[in-house]
Image (cartoon, rainbow, N blue to C red):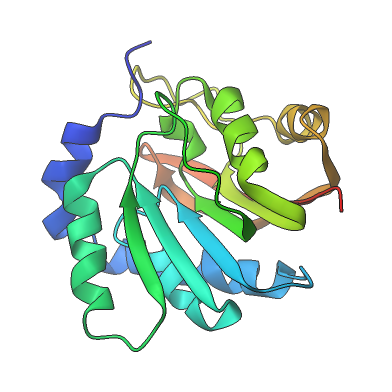
Length: 204
């Protein structure tokens, strides 16, 4: 398997990333996340692997501060342009968490949408993210159910929800639960796919 997180590819996609289809899916995911956000303290949130910021910007009113994190400089340029005309407390941070460690900020909530499938060693990245969660903080993951028909050197073929949940529990996440929030034809690598939303909390 190649280095799945192809930053150069995402740099090239940045200007045309916000297609009507991606915006529609982002709206579905962010509203499902909004319904699941139950963390008590809503101080600071991270949109990890944010791309052009579609998820976090939809949820901007849920937290006092947002940090939009991505490895792609060009994607973050798109976020910065959006933030420049929005009256919200937010900033961008370029970091490749697969190959480095973030500064020890603490977040009330971390959201990520269709990100894990691009990360080769996603378990180590999840561990780093959980280290950044404040006690009692919430992690929300939207991604695709495992699909054996997806065969690619660039992405994982989705995820077995039970295995992913067990991995998160092994890392110390509690109350891990998941549900399907959307499914459609040609949704993932030209295959019919189901999107799930998984949520869990760091021990308080």
